[in-house]
Image (tube, rainbow, N blue to C red; front, side, top):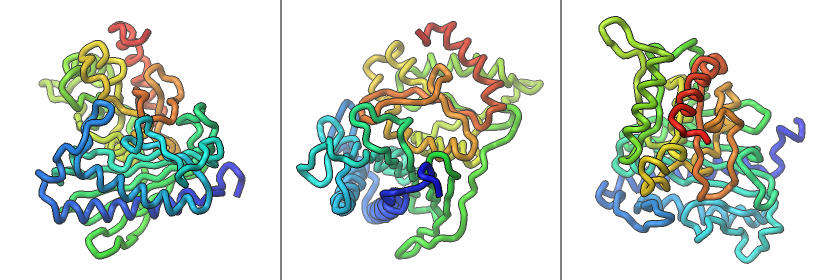
Length: 342
């Protein structure tokens, strides 16, 4: 195995174990706590609400990091663990001595999961430590795991190493411990267009919805149109989880996703501009790109951002290069016409 594909710190097996612990803890809470309790606002940090169910994931994460730090020092990056979203393990270690940086979103999709409505995702990735310059482009190992509702029997776990293949397994989660059933299906759509498929421009929350919808209408009218009689050819799915959206596109359910909130919200709804994707929401993009999904920044550039909890990130995902070639020129022109690209 080449150095590029190796995992010298055992990141993949460690993160897979962490995720299964978190998955079990969240499932236990959903089974024994009412939605009213899980959805109680426990705190407001950085302008975003932290719900009671979020605290369960955070506690499991901290315990695990304390264990893992017995092998080597590392820096954890996660929302809510400190004022700046960083915490050294073991406690008191010098950040300059961190061997790697671990970025985690314990529950991506809290709002759907706390009402037992839709799966959330546990996201994490590791990058060699380059200090404050460490970015999304440095991430080398990533794991994402489904945190399903109590009505679900199956849940997937996916992982990848930069430069290597993506892998995944499906678990039966109904017993006292998850049972591995076989490989998960990782197969992005190879459709040549958006016709009769799902494609989404993100507009999860009030504020910016009008501007986003107008952009969406213009984009899909030009790249897809409609059947005679006005029947729509493109379907929308507002899955309030960036990890969930990545799963949908890398498994062939969706064909195109654009999250342009950092471009739109500061103009349309400045008070909502904190509710954008952040680096921890996108730390598992290398799993999607490993199976052929194309992911870019708002201008079509390689997606990148500092490994922190504050930077708003705009991102665009195409199920294939063929769809990128069809959609990207139209989208870029529309963004320029609306003054959304400086």
